[in-house]
Image (cartoon, rainbow, N blue to C red; front, top):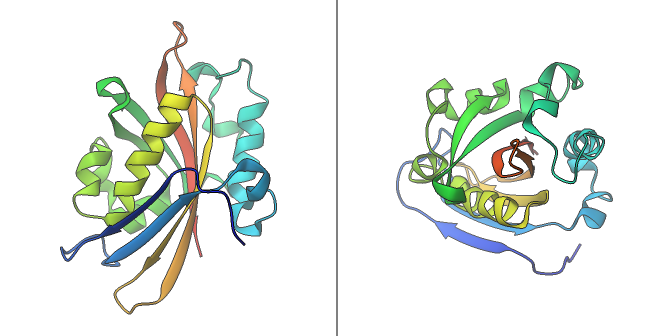
Length: 178
């Protein structure tokens, strides 16, 4: 399936990275209408539907209540605080899927710090910045190979949340790897 080029990144690293040692990754934004046709975006689309039903064009962070989400979504979710006027993001909460992949130690770590160890996080930082700047959800895929060179694809959505002054102060979303 070919999608229009919106945001797209390629990264390569010879450094030891996350447990799967991601040496190469290619990432690209997926328009919402195209994401609807991709079964692997199912949980991300379910989370997006909840976001759409929250009040406001960019929902208030108080409207975000993880206990209202389906139990199937929770392990794949994450929440990040906006740092440095949207140039970086700090992990606030991570579902068990992310803790298994990256370790619990990344909670409170900057996304840019995670990106020094994991090539996938480099493009995630760029997509998070786009979500912050555009104040709209961003769906994207990251194709990567693990240490045995098996190709995997991670399907992710970032969505913004605003404070009382309508400034974007948090991003949340989920990731599913096939």
